[in-house]
Length: 457
Image (cartoon, rainbow, N blue to C red; front, side, top):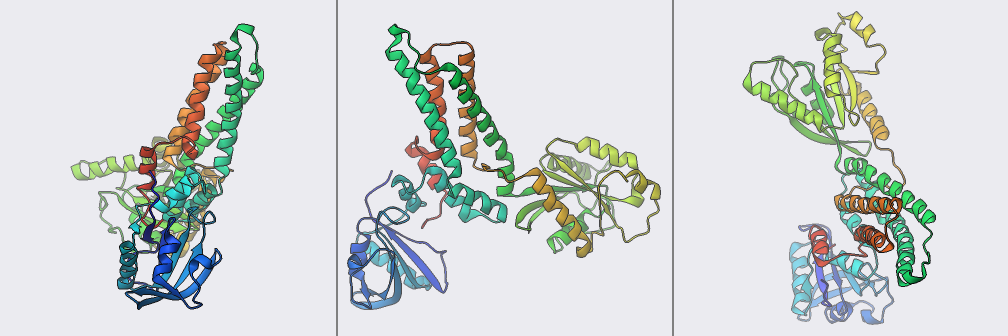
């Protein structure tokens, strides 16, 4: 999976810029760079201390190609665990390519996607969970996804899993030791203590699995559906939230016939808004399809903004809609729109008195700011930051498999099955936990994970 070749790649984005960084890693990185770099202090890099920055020129055929800064990291004290060089050059695309081509001509090859991080994993600088967090950190678009990636990078999750694996390994070794002395009828693994352990592990795995929904939402954004009757002001609200004319606004009922989606960041949290077709009975075939799509979007949302004009609705319509869309995992926020207009329906307002209402004018950004605050508060209720939240689907699947194996262990303990059969289920759970951190893996899994990295990382 990993070679001993020295690799090179542009670590900063492609294109013109003030500064570009080119990364080189491998056993010949320092030797090769010394051939092509002339330091101002005239000392070769091989004689310099690790973690130093050196000013000088990259030379091509004896001529100065660019004045650069070279940062030197000697293995194993580097990101990859190998000798590593980072060249900070001027951001000309011509200079970038000339330097890379120069190193290629001197026996260095272009890195594969994620190969620097793969080498860090192979060389024990990080586990697989942390390596995946690097990709998540690069891709993070909001505070929530950034926090999750940083949490993973700190390896708290990995340490918890390793502790669980060690406890299971200890008991399975005791059980397997019993098998070696089966004729003497001895018990090295006390079954009562083991039952307590498996119950604890089962509970911890369930907590991690349950956190996936919250983690996935924070990583990818909170889905918010805006629904209500035609002309309730849904499209106007979306335009105000996005601060642009994304949706067509018209007094004609049924103008919005298809879902319109966009996202914004509010207080570091990404919200994915969907403006839906107005909810009403209609014989228009196209509008009917739009309403069906509205119901589908609401079924996939985490938050529903039910928008209404108090002068164009009654309490039964509101109750019917809320009953239709009610789900345990859906937060419904009642939003009264058009508060700038005279209220001709005071009785409805009294009937809604026991419900928590947000009152806005959808075209007024200052008014809508109250709704934004409520959305952020709602996320805190839906997704409290616990000690560990998982957001990676690979981890989620492995945890589910580990939980299933532990449940089989508990069944076996309850039914007093033999130690050899018990050991099989314990080993299976250990393997699934090890898949997350990379203690048990294969080249196909690694290939799939690192293929999604950018080149240069």
